[in-house]
Length: 495
Image (cartoon, rainbow, N blue to C red; front, side, top):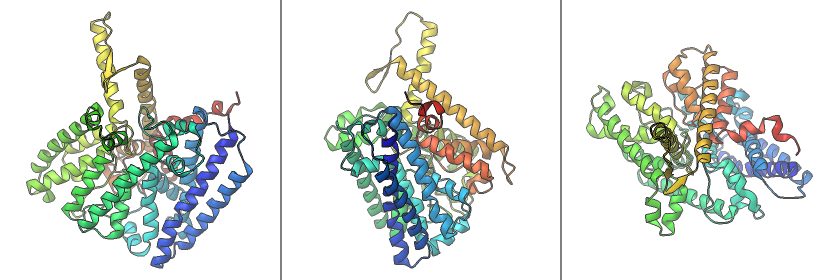
């Protein structure tokens, strides 16, 4: 175990966090908001911690293997969540540290679950835009990954950084776009920045205010979903809602495919089975929800065009795990949707985006492989002597890969069940079986919205439930293994 490289890298992450906090600090100064000193204090704390680790713990070898990669990613994400919460606590915007930690975990993990009430968000929009900016900016940083950010811009990144990329990037596998891990990280971030800028420009043209365009682009890019108004996206015009819906889908697609398109290998990109499954699920789900809404008596779906818009928006929001809502506040929240639509959206929570995207959930490819594995077992039961080879994306899938997906799914269900049981011990006002199960599914899959009273926020849960959900969000974002293995004593035994 290369302990020195682990803590040295965390020191660099601490410095990166301090630099990222400069942006909302400048915004606070420009707008004359009182939170500038809380942000500046946090910058100082993180910078001192970072410089201490970088200077005091210099690694003799920069080699990063699989174990180091997992630990670096887990500890870095815990660090940025823990320190990133301080501006909210110091400024008094969220005085309770557990609440602030929950909010920041939700931000960096791109979940979008919040403990803030609608009135608190509206108040901050008027008095403290800098903290709202930081809150949404954590989505953007967490979407592609804090370690990927470091690797993209650090000149001395180790060639063994692919172990870190695989630990941090979502999906069953992470492939190199180019031979060097640092170059892969740079390409990913250039694509990420390009799409983010494109969305900001589109929203500005559609009439959204400048500040709102930036924070909503950050939330869409990271598929996070923190809004800056109590009604999420509902208060903006239809054009803005359509733009965000389109970009939620785009950010839910594997970024490797975009790189193939840039290289002119469009045919290769369009051969992706995962892409077409993703688009197919969105198309079918949108059609079903559109019809269901049209047949309902909801006031905001009186016209066919409105039913289609709200259906597409919510389907894109749930399957990409962004969590924005287009439902007008006067009509209610997701609870007003018909039962069929709510049930279908609940299933989309599990599927999530494509591997290599910023979306959460199980991932389309992993769900597809699970289905193929089940089909293989059924065929084996009927025809034991047949080979029954499984093919996906034009390649034969090994039994080892299928078994790995099955093991991941088993562990995923255990974690989900554990989080749900913990929530059932909570005596918060209005909590029901529906609200607890959707809250657990939402946090583990990094979605944000839930049903029942939790649709309005997670503030009714006690401190222990919030802490459990905070780690559930991190576990979901890092896909279980980094967090679990980091807290396993055997991981740290020197061998």
